[in-house]
Length: 381
Image (cartoon, rainbow, N blue to C red; front, side, top):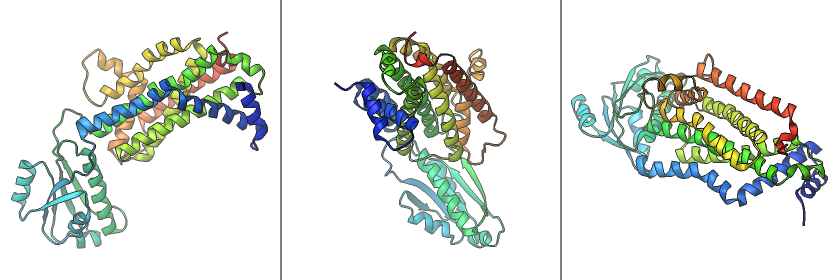
């Protein structure tokens, strides 16, 4: 029977890359196989995906073939109307007066567009005309409405060739219990992202460490060329692959990212480092997988709760004050701003700065622990 140390040694001897990278990849590959064949690991990976799909099915609707109804009052002959007619995701309702437009918006569950006379010519000559748009999506069409917003901006941008050459006024008519800066789609996406990183991700890597400690991995390492540092990096690599794959699947099911998506990706990259650090630190401190589940089960709630409430409700005291000092609040609010506002940037961003500082402290504490007791990754004592 081939032991783990023999597998690691064989991987090191057969590879062409530098020895350290071969050791790290050997450990990561072994862990990925374990995750792919372990029922509890697979359930951990697919639970956030299942929750997201059920939410889309029950609340937002997963059928993206629904058309977005739009009332259009074109006072001239704008290219925007032609472009929207060619968009198969839109159902246009052409009206002949401003009064009829308001009637359609107020009585029907549809958005509206009022295009002034000579709009295209004014845009082309740089006069910066006004384009008024009412956002009134029916339930389950918030994401389609956001896509339509980007479509309109892209079409107007083509007319002017450079910067956005029109003053587009977005009038949001949707009445829902959520914050005016938050849509149902981005709210649920933020919740699922936090679940993947701080419930699935942290537990995954920490369990990989503690379960091997229970299997006397330290004894096995004595007979292999790997060190505790190779073990840490290998498991971090395996965890990163699983986390990134799950996040990518969620983003794909969500239809992509809205707002300032590069900033969203920056938040995710920073948060991945924080989640991996927490899981490695926990794995080095506890002695068994049961202790790991208990510690992380309680502790990670503090990272997920702000995503549930910080962008949804104004909490009474003392809960509002308690939530205000939780580091994860800055992550939830930062993701919310980035997903719902394309103008927000990383420069002078308080949420990003605080979350980056918290991540730096978390990574620093983990590195200090590994420096002081590297053997804690592979042995209980």
